Image (cartoon, rainbow, N blue to C red; front, side, top):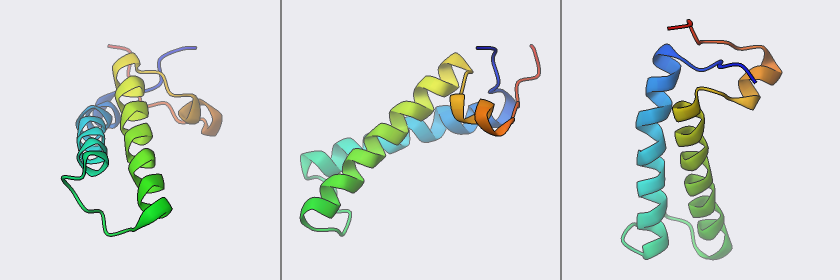
Amino acid sequence: MDKNVGGLDRTVRLVAGPVLVAVGVAAAAGYLDIGLAGTAGLAVTALLLVAGLIFLVTGTTQKCPANRVVGLDTYDGD
């Protein structure tokens, strides 16, 4: 797969990814209350962790399958 993540898209992923992971870890550890009880809170916590990890991987590798599916290419070739 060719690179298709670059520029501002990559920067946002590399900044938002660790933030989402940190919030997810804090919520899982009980340091942060995300306002949802029970299963819903657990699902949101898991979603934050997964989304953060996906952002980190796609920002680092500069390859995003979702971008490819929708035909989005922000990589400028540098």
